[in-house]
Image (cartoon, rainbow, N blue to C red; front, side, top):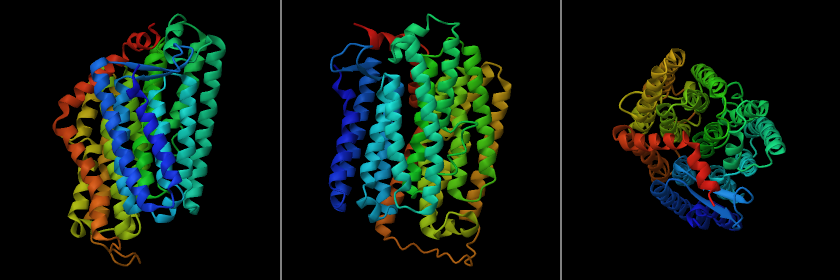
Length: 500
């Protein structure tokens, strides 16, 4: 029995319920949210240290043996994702004190954040495909309500696009689940992996793999299903955009890594080559979309897409080094991308808009804001010695080792265009003088203490993590490499779940 496994689920659930019951009391909500996020982070760190010691831990709910009951499983990948999610939760809760109005808080804003985290945690811990579908739907419901909360026209338009394509993804996912269950009689991922390994040439394996690839590509905003993301992520408040940017698509990437390192590994030459092509196209179309935009959050939204391509690149190459690069990239990207969206929110506070044509002069007005943007922006572009450089270097080295030159060249060119996009934001929002004729005030009406604590505090915290990952990358890379080795030996996962 491993009770540590249940806490990352219980804490967000109970916190969300308590927040909903106290939604009319703003001070109580603030205290509960901060306490819940800190306890969530502590429980996730405890789980990570437990997994580092014991490799893979499981919990059979109701004492039903696998594969008949509900199984919770935590390996290194799950534990890393939980810790990152808890860090982002804490940051978003603090930042929301600055950027989210009281009316949204009274309608359950903080409660919805924790219900979203309940779904995300369940997705990382479940050992069953049907329950993974259930957790995805919990995430979808909570994220949809967060997106429309406030009822502004742009939010509603973005939410319709967001939920429509994600519902299609859910339908395809459920279809794949039904087909697999009809043939194999089980949905426990470890049991499926064991049984499917006996059918390497089955048409069922190939067709089911494609269904899951399409479903999770939609969730991850990979090519060609990415267009819902830039149409929706810039519409809600900055705190919600940052939360979505940091975590939601990464759950789709997590699902792809989990399924295509555990269950569908019978025909790697076909399935993973398709993933590699998708990765390259995702990089290209995402970065070209970013280069054509002039609104900060839309630029950053397209860059989420291009960076998903790097994460899938390691899965497509499918070596220890490549998978380690993908995992390292996920760690880097969640921190950096969240921070850039937080910065975009403060830019909007200063100018009333994040349209680059209506901004300017921020370097002189707030050097600290310029610094909190510049470091993660350079990291995203892969400038050494920041975290993004080491993540991309690892992936490119893995590509060169396999002589996969086309994906290496693609990754390098996309990095150059990423640097161009980041330079565009820097020159327009920070370097050029503010014209003063846009009708937008450049003065911040927010109290200075709130801006410093709830605004710059989370950004400096994430900036510090970015610098630590970049300047002291060795232990993080070793963790990523150990995780990759664990993923490339699915028998460890199968034995941990099915052992009597």
